[in-house]
Image (tube, rainbow, N blue to C red; front, side):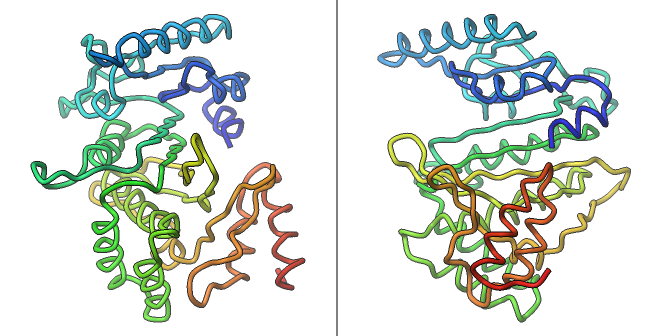
Length: 312
């Protein structure tokens, strides 16, 4: 997907995100990248020494990779919301001449990896959690720039009740035949919150992107075991700006998003979770994975055909 985007833009891609000191994603995509804006924490108190060491290793890894880079310090959600880091540094790739006065980012890849989950609520703070607000703001900052948005979330958070309410509202917009699927996502127990997160985030991201003039292609999310056995869900969105003055409309409908399968990564293999929502349509799943780029789809299609005798 990134190779296709680079060919379309005719230049190496600009990356904004959280590669960590090992910069594994930057190393994997190095042939497609021309610049990296990397963000990492610098906290005070007992965390400061460890955070400074992480930042030192991050800079060393980027220098060793031989790629042009910038390192910003602080929480990535604060950088997105404010437009600068704790030192007042702004992302290099920005458009300061935007007629609206908004600081626009101009990145081709945005990779956000939240081990802490989508967000947390406290009794003292009401409204949208900061990380969700930052995702919304990201699309405002990126308006006018085609990009790939990668988002990885821990299923642990304190906004699960809010996710249920979000899905109940979404239920009113889907075909009546799919309302039982939404009910299933709302009712799954605490051990299966990855399903609820999958459904809620797809609906949320598409809506936030469309409000800022993007049409979005949502790919099937992938669940996997992360650091310290945390259950993570990885999302991929292809975001293309339009000239619509009001609200863009993506080719994928609400119904299409409900039907997207949840995939899983186990023992080196990506395949669909055997458990899916009520009345799951495996033929639709077969078509959904066929859209995956660069030959990723055929192995998934074979998996589905072998186990469920699906006809293309």
